[in-house]
Image (tube, rainbow, N blue to C red; front, side, top):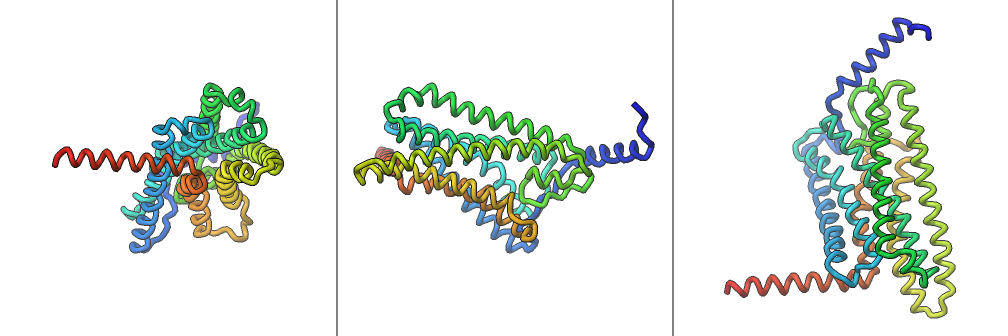
Length: 333
């Protein structure tokens, strides 16, 4: 092969130098006014505590109540774990930056955020698909439910969702952070997001990662299509149930999952497919909060509102804890 011209070699060396000189990234601040920064801190703290409480209660309730040791609630427990992990990846750092009036995140911290976010959100996408299959089997093939979704099958499918998310995260993180960066270190988002990091890359250096993103988008579209087809079959089966009470019971187990999927998909699609003409840093911040924070805090509320089994188990758990607390205090009286 012919040797590269000196000018090209100089450009490549400069790209490598610029990439290796990035030791930290600057995240986009919610506001520059101190009062607004503290307001964002308290707002995020409230959302984060609500997510911790809601998802923590679901995890504890499902784990402690043996009546909830069924495939549907096993997958719900996994979903709560993923939601807790996802919101803990971005919100605490954003809270710390608002509180301490800074926007810096280390190179390693940024890479960790990208890895964990891709890992957890990918696993959640796969898990929501598995949960749709669970509802399909329960309603359309109830006689085969125990065979198709036994305890071993549930563990294997949940492990597959977590494993696929992990492999996806390794692939994206390695691709993203192997691209040379030539456009500074200011990330136009309140957390490290792959599209925003790619904007800092050198010309044409991001095409490899764009290809991987395209493959991931295709897989996500496949998951969404599977969920839609599952619910088409579910609604057809439910409408054939003769009793209105039976229809209501079947719908009550499906609607929370359908609401979570709709919220997850609609906010994500709007974030990445909105017209460039309406894009702005402030709007991008709001949209990012809508798709990366709000669903993770709202999911426990969605699942507990229409689910009588969760409500009853929560009531028993809280009553039991209160009774034990009273007995403990009386023992010192």
